[in-house]
Length: 142
Image 1 (tube, rainbow, N blue to C red):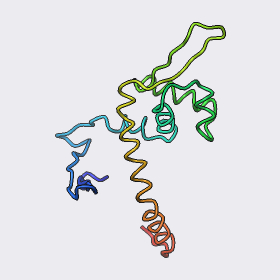
Image 2: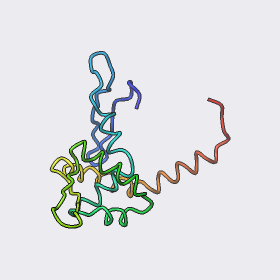
Image 3: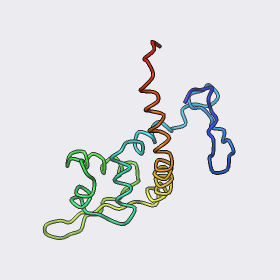
Image 4: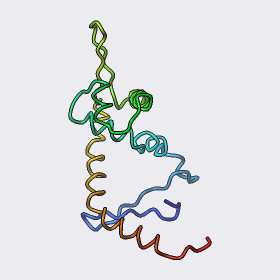
């Protein structure tokens, strides 16, 4: 989004929401980049989706999230834990059992993730058509 394009259309109501640009002299970085770094990557979103239905053990998460490596899952849950979105609970058993669950802050993200998923489904055909039209155009030098 450019600094001059700050209007976001709210499709359901037909209204326009004004979004303040970050990085302006009178509006310093509001932290949105930091948040999007975490919740904007696909693995974090998929972990949040899986944990939305309740606590999961590491292997359960790994099996449920197609394509995620053990290392990437470890990094993702650590980052989410550091940001206060996921709680890692260790049980005093032999061997130790660990599960992951959403914190209240993490759970508050689930309605946004669902809204994004719903938007994606509703607009999938439109986006595919726009991509096909764009790809069919002769390439132009910018």
